[in-house]
Image 1 (tube, rainbow, N blue to C red):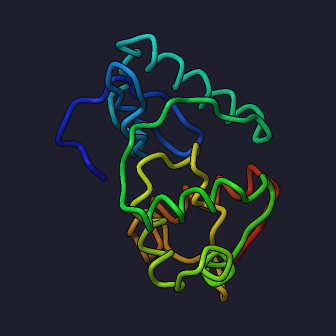
Image 2: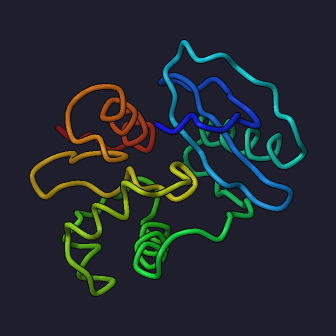
Length: 161
């Protein structure tokens, strides 16, 4: 969980809070935060739009995001993130399935998933381990991040042990 620069918005989420960082033209980062994090009203039009779209997702998981995302990541990460974006709401793929689809290997796909700067918008929660839910946001064990992943999947109608 990065907190080295201020957020442009921090909004309530069913599992805690969501922090949003933007620049003048794009969403730079979306971060899952614990519920005791202080809320911040959107500080710009783009932060307000990102917050509104995330709230619409919480109301209806079938909504489609339309946000300008900052140019980030390696060529491989971007390939993984494009692959993740092709996974439909209510579906899950394993790291291995996604790796085969994009010509990679499961461990590299998992690393790219964990480095996704725009969770929810690029739905990395839809990628799971072959034997269960897998890690989330570079956090392999149980706890807050795994609970967020479970909530997001359940919100989309998917139940995984």
